[in-house]
Length: 345
Image 1 (cartoon, rainbow, N blue to C red):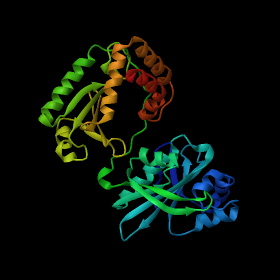
Image 2: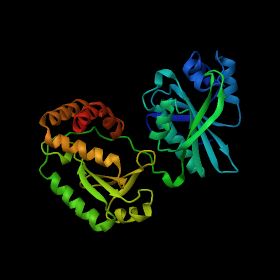
Image 3: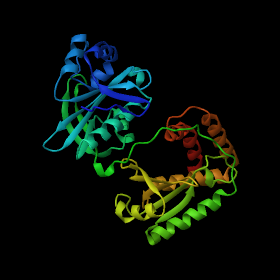
Image 4: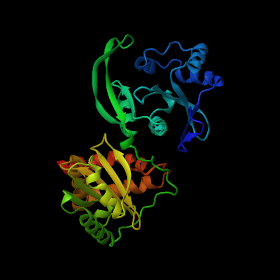
């Protein structure tokens, strides 16, 4: 069991104690949807059930708490297979805490802990119909390996369940995202942004040569007249992003640091450099997400109404408090999808 706090400033993980039993009952009693997915969860759920859960051996269990208030939000744990040096993640979250990204944060924390303890493989399984649980795995950086068909009879659901299997390996792990230290700022369009991109393009092409499949200026700084965060977004395609030895070392020499691997999202890799701030998104050759980013950029360049709509949305959202930049990006999903429908019409 970890002897140091596990926290990202929003959620914390700590060992369960006997005094937590009433909080567990509050979380689980009467939650029929959760009891359907977790068919071994007693219902009705009693104080005795909670005390048994806390004392049960065979799993390294943590209470998932609000880092500021210490309110219990759920549970996450590891089942270790010492012979295989692997750890299986299991979790549940109280109903009124769902939809806020808490369990994704907890999954990132416990995965980091497991890998630091020497796990050669961290994995989890979820019913493919449990979309929320699958999204936790994907957003936490796990790779979808496949599906075990008809793997478990669930009497409560009245059917056999498939298991979607997700895993994370040490080579795929990158240090977790840091919370934002200052509010996000939107800047009026700067005529220097295309020049900054041109300088970065020359740097990248000089580092990689013919290993560059496609390279493009994307994001809001690529659209003349559009207000943006002062970040130069660049999309790069290489033959295979998984073969990092073929491109990452040369990018690092050129000043770009690897920040993120997303095996479950187009095998995306994110690099960053500072002064100016550049986000370099690396995708494998022929990636449809690269095409989508170009189509969105080109629509904003060509259509003043959509450009104004997008800027209004950004100005409305930028003033809110965001823990991560990605949360701000996710909040724009609806307006982005709306514009993309017109771009593809």
